[in-house]
Length: 306
Image (tube, rainbow, N blue to C red; front, side, top):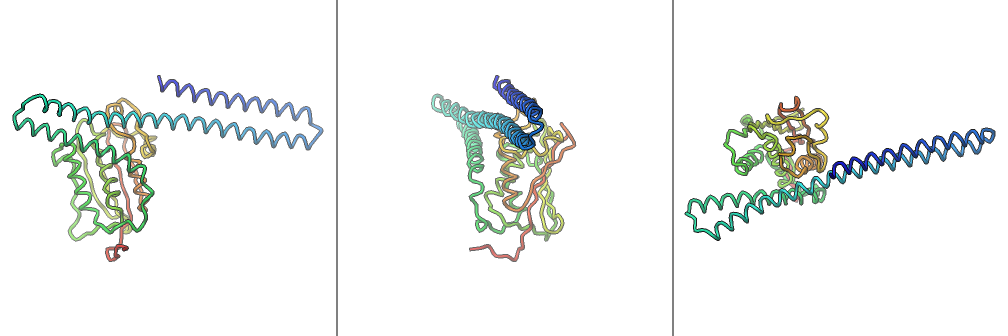
């Protein structure tokens, strides 16, 4: 119902804009005919016509963008509400069961583990929303020198634990012995970016999770983290849109996949704040997706600013 209403609002805004522009054209032609011998009035009419037409076009574009932005925000609110309600309802159910029944110790421990996992999911959602609001408040001197490979390995371990996955589901190609990959970054922000890349790969591999990660030096000055999955893939027109705030890929598969639409937006924002970039590539739907996060290499000899 809401989708049809928004589409109707967009169609109405465009239709009114077209009708007003057509009316202005007719008025301008009539003005020129009536004042064809008065050059000053003709020029004045053309200038006013141009200004009015530009105003109408800009207003129409603004209205359409606002309707679409509201649509994305509504989708985000619905997703966040679901992401918050689901673990809370689960935790409440298990707590009520523990309160009402005398359960054997193994089952109690199982319930505790499930509630802790739901709490981690709830905390991750809250942190993601908060992170989207606080990005940009970081200052360059908040960054420290750190090695990327151990951080990525740690994020993989966290992702495996959160999603109860076997170790072979997410594999990191070994970095050659002696190769260092130092970057200057805000540790918690960079950890958020890597976790979101991995979480995105897990979510969009609903049938079978086979994720391959690798680290490599690019053009001698950058380090690239590549996260490749064999999931639902992307159409060519979605490769840039997935990094927009609140954006979620449309389609039947996307309805089943949970999320807030903030994960990849945060990855791009964090990458750019650190002088890097993130890109997506996919052979097409159902053929998997590869996300590549590129960051500038730091000089290991540099000292961290006090």
